[in-house]
Image (cartoon, rainbow, N blue to C red; front, side, top):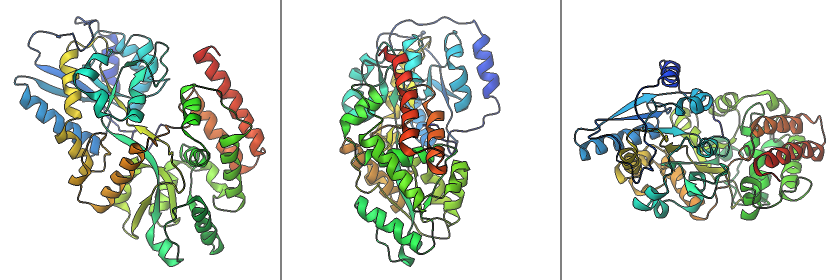
Length: 443
């Protein structure tokens, strides 16, 4: 899921770096897997591309890994080159086809991103490394899903082509002061949640901060779909393991519930034109008591919410929630130091790096929550650990087929503004899904 709140990290040299890399023809390449490749003799520099903010938990965790890695490998220096999410999305295929590539880089997970690069032979197969370093036992099955791709680039099975070092999930942020003002307890069931929404509305308060012009509304819709779904639905919808029905079942139930919430005023019709930033700033300003969105908002909320007490709870009644591993660390096929790069990736899953992320709310996938001292950060991590432990990560609704994100945004806006009946809007969404799925699988 593309997130404008965290991923738009501006690096002044990013475009130039990508352009130079795309045009360069210098250097030799390695065609061996990282388990077998030795790279160049006595390598002194390992180039690492990523697009996280300097003050983010991910960057701080990776910096800790760099320091530890360099100490354990005398003479080796990790050179970090900052890129932007958008430029890597646009230019990665061109850049990685050349010889002047990074040794390791952060890249988006999913069929249309890491899967596509893997199927085109641009990424190193890390399967042997997963066994060598124990990633296949250290990471939970739902986290491993985004690391594996088959020969067609479809996520969830096949060989390892990337390794996640952090996670993310959709949760419920709430204004404790507003809950207290209207005598509302933290809901633990879906029925309790709807009662809370009704109570706010009865008191003239629109309960849910939303944004229909970008990803947030689709996440709320998917939470409502998952309320009636099970793991087999997720496997069918996300991984194409079976048929998906857009005319009944969880998809129709969730769509009807969203339309019902709009009609009851739990979601403002005006939200159809709002962006994620509009939603977030309104919640921070105390205009809405509830915001359903991703854990990537946490650092900002924990810092900027000063006029009320911030709380969190997982979506009531759901055993499944939108979420996944974070973006992947991948090794380009033409990396000159593939074996060393794999060793560095393993350092990002080490205790020092993972505990650093944990303390800063970064949701490490192999961390220790006991090191966290901030209570809000501890809640975020504990809730994530609980979701992962129960195999509750259900990925994101825009992942399955290329172009589905834009279709999902349009679909959500249609439901909110009422321009089509919910069932008709869902039917159109299903038509696009079925076409994209056929393009990927042939059926």
